[in-house]
Image (cartoon, rainbow, N blue to C red):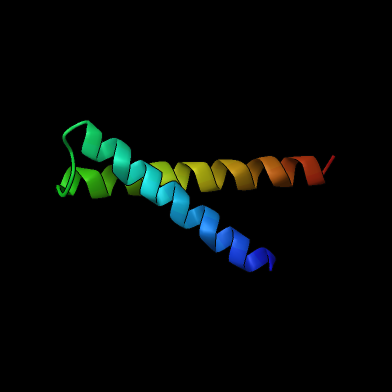
Length: 57
């Protein structure tokens, strides 16, 4: 159940990033792919770092 929720939240995050790019005129461009990839990786790595930092306290 947790894996399914994680997958759905990930898809929702990507969809919201795509909507933001489309709203700002970057829809269906190479810039959109780069922005979504960079923001997604930043969010993922930032959350993972925060989790590990709290775990090691």
